[in-house]
Length: 369
Image (cartoon, rainbow, N blue to C red; front, side, top):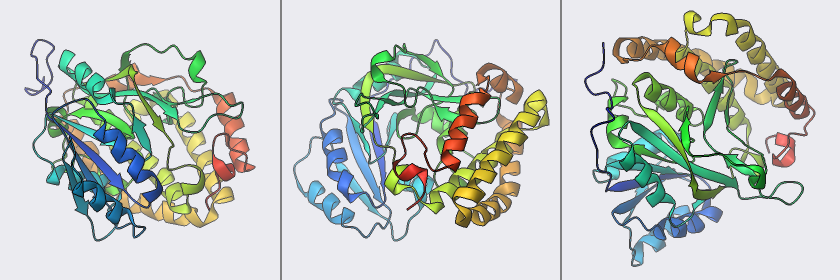
């Protein structure tokens, strides 16, 4: 039965007011540049809400100094007494923001071009069925040969239930991606339609799943949007640079714990045996290999990741039941459309490099510091 609130292509929904939500945690060295990039945005009806997750590194002082100056776009600061993660921080930012037609999630290590937001807004305004849109994200650091490399042109899914940023690591010069639909958008720098977020909100009131804390929350949200009949899009003319804070010197055992556990919790939320089908052995093997990698390269994260997975499993299954009751699009339909072939050889080669401490594009060989 179709959902009465599902998007329809013949109903135009204006997109005027935008609230940017920035969650900051121990990134004082990048905060000023991010604020300057947001202040330079050309879209007129736009406010910035920065959630400071108790960094204790001088970030709050930088924010207060920025808020004291005259600004084209209002700046609101939410000073949390503890680190509530990305998911919790976004919810705190939404609570503090004024009502808006769209929500722009921007990581502190993302620097969007001045016309970035207005290009994303134009996509939402032109396509009422579109829930989310992202631009072309380029790594802030050049590749080994000195050329610019892509960070993300959208989130893609494979039958192995491995998710990656499309075109990650490819030279910018060789990329010719056109605008179009994608499975999902990266939470690093993406614009979401507020009505879509409201429709896919969990019954407990959350939009981003709180148990995920950080990482994989954008995959979870993309999967939900697909189940409710919304689309996500890529707009190559909206340019931004992104460092990718979960890699290199900012990578830690806690990040590894979250990545390992959250992938399984997202699968428990959205998958079932009928959607896995013939992909089940593939999912099992890749999962075993990923957890073996964790045990060998970051042994201190293995047991905490297992505990986090066990703690969150029951709630994930309850969310799965909720989706099956509410979502108008069958889970099997989403998988059939978006979950593409998995290429074993390059993945295993990269997996082996990580085991040996030579992960490409990750400072320190991908080992936490």
